[in-house]
Image (cartoon, rainbow, N blue to C red; front, top):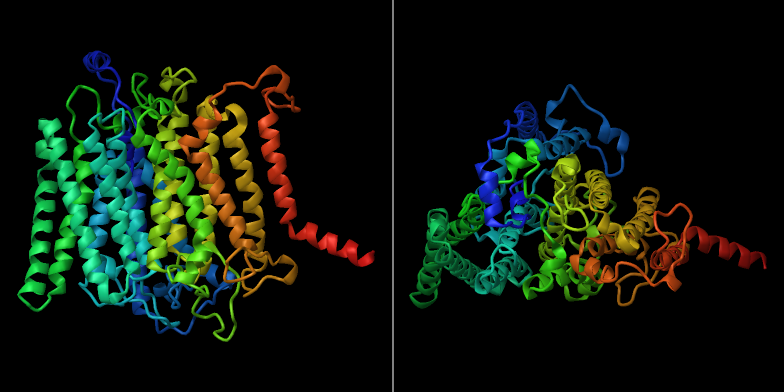
Length: 620
């Protein structure tokens, strides 16, 4: 994960770096924090693994905590260690959530060597262990993770046949895909075809995951066809990279062999099956897909170890030592908008998440998103559920893959935003002053990304109470990250765009939290809280609209395109200046217009205001 810290930085003048490289080395960073964090991570990971194994062996226990029983969920049965991490119903316990949370909190402070290879190691282990993961059945006595729709060794995408498995795979692939995109940034890689190949490879990766929504009759052909395009594109990218940088050849040798072997053998397999009518061997497809995915995972990580000039390619010594001559944060996002490549990515981060989330109710009519929403296994089956939520709409593997794909440009933009959190408005380096802020900004970005992934993975029907815990954790992490980013870079506060979007997130986040806690167990909100939505399969959309609007504001706040459009003029004309009490500026007109409109919208959607209006109308 922290290997992303290098890719989000832009290279500076080579002569400057040669001068920096000639200076005497600074003292090595202290190793005690790395050791403590690594021990905590490994210990918690072992505890979670043993707890899940024991829980799967102990699913016959009669001690079952039901969906919203917080007291039972937080209790510990010391006489039965098999239920400490996961209950017999398959729901993580409070101890299990705390162990996972401690693992995530320890990640930014682990040994740099471990973090450097983690973006490749995590998806590699998940792919290889995927067939061994327990099967999920729809009953109370089960702790499974994935569904058995097509059987084992039927292809990677076919085995990711439910929302939680697809979400976990996307979460683990995020870091290496973000590294790949940041490594071909317009200021780092000026060869257009190389950037286009990397961008096309990431697009094909998400398209490959979306093939899970194709009918089983045509699924295998579509999955392998897109996968062949993916490995062919990445092989082309690797070839272009080695032509431009011959010294990079040793680092791209394994990925090149993996792409070539996977693509050629998989194509030969399909020709043999369809033309020679040989018996299909699904495990052959699975092994070949594994080889291509593992090569893709290791490509950006291995390339991050390559350095063609004296500029330090690994950020980790600077991240922990706080060297004042470090280049971290020297990136100028505004200067990148001249490149079409970055403009497309910035526009995607502003449009895709909001468009996709607001379109989910419409996608239920096509079968892409599930409806009615799946509920926990102990929920009464005779009750018809009409309350919509984002978690319910992304329960299917294809809708989960679409959600992860739409949010991918946002996290790329956030890592680029993190890269400039150490710059002053003029772009001067201020590392010695803001190093601690930089460290915590990066840490909370990692927390936000991982907790957001767990929020999607722990869907409500599978992990009801952990879903609430992880959603709260990612919301708090996102708020803290945005506050630290604005504190580190004063230009982000200019005009009030990020502050206004943060206000929108809070305004719509509070109603979502209140509704979730008060009416979480209800299949339908009260009549006075019903809010229609065009072409939605239900008239009970208030909770869905609140959480989606808050997340849309977060994606807009992270978009470099929206920030650059908003900051084209540093200051409004004098006749438009509007003071605001205790504001650090007298240029508040745009901010007040935004906030007033959003406040009016929140009051219009407020259940309290509508109920007061109905009471007043009744008295009249």
